[in-house]
Length: 394
Image (cartoon, rainbow, N blue to C red):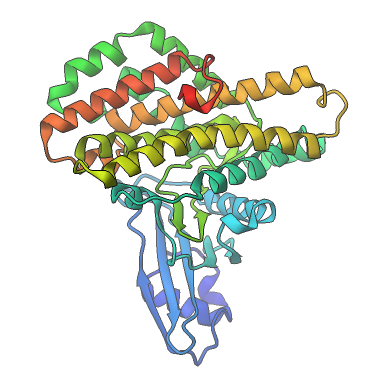
């Protein structure tokens, strides 16, 4: 169809017509569309068939940042589509189904997961999901280990590294996560006045910390270990009592496994510290805090247990089945995970990409306390990452 021979940003009406033009819904269907995304680099629409009740989500990458007009590489959309297909093949219960990818329009048509809710928002309400540690640890092991060259053919792995180079979005991470929170070289950090001196003392002036972060940055940029999600925070996880879905892997590339694991763990600390200071005292608070502390421990411990089991099942190279090597390999993953958790915590507190667990705190005294406690946790994780070997240590 000539209309779709060149990329253009879609409207709600365009999204509805798109589903008819490509036979996602019959042309005679009674359809309703709505824009459901509030992101800065994508347009997200839901189209519902009012006759059958069926619905799909369309996610379109744009050429420019909405906020600043900064140009963006549309290739990230293809990477995201391919990642979702790979993740679906490895962990089908935990990712939305992909129905179509349009390389010209940069549109992914996928399963509507509106019956699942944003994990970050749910935790802020003190909701408990008992199966979450089991589900997210399975997702991590099942999507990470099989994409390494411990399992893949070496040539295939190298081809994938090349295919999934994602330099533009990696550059965002390298700046916002690994650099700016410690040097503020672009003057983009956003720090409340009450914590300016605290941040200066504990982050900007700590050269030992900067050296540890430099090691983690070098690892992120050079350790093409596994096909990682690259932005696995609690806003990219949708959940209900029956299951979990992981979305938005557009930052994906071949990097260190621990970056994904650490992002999951680090984001849980935002909920933990927020609820510690702001949830009304009582039985509900005690139960939630106890569960979340256990969940953090369990994710770490379950990852270790499931990793060891899956490693023994799918790693066949006789050099890699060596027990000494396996222990060394897992130790590096755990160290990277703890360090990445610390990086994620710190960058969300002082950087310009914040989380609602912090920004929704109106009581300035409590916000000061929350931010300082989180920064200190992040520093401890980064500096002591080689010492933390089990969930209880976290």
